[in-house]
Image 1 (cartoon, rainbow, N blue to C red):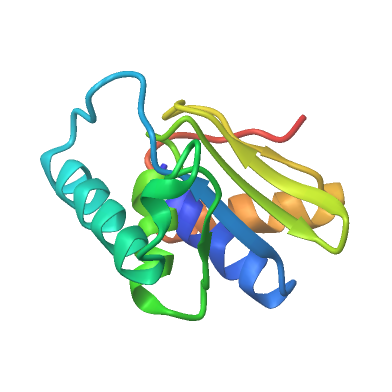
Image 2 (spheres, rainbow, N blue to C red):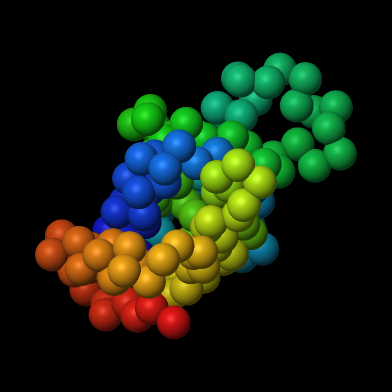
Length: 132
């Protein structure tokens, strides 16, 4: 999934999408590296917003700047583990994921989706993702 999310992240960056991730999980992250990144991302959220503890759900909607390597890594490594990640272009949602290492949702033209999948496969994606 990480390879596909890297390709998707690059697409979202080119589309100037506003991307966010909810830094909560319902189940422990099984991948140790992703788990460490998750904890580091939560610390980064606090560093970016010292008043975070005053929010009702302080780690919801953590904004990501995919032009920054650290934020791109958070997106590609954690989007499939957290309770949610979303991307908008204007007022239109174009990407969503929820705690699923097998499924993401995108609202892009089929030709673009097929191209993204082909790129992910060329880059070594082990699974054979499909478009529906």
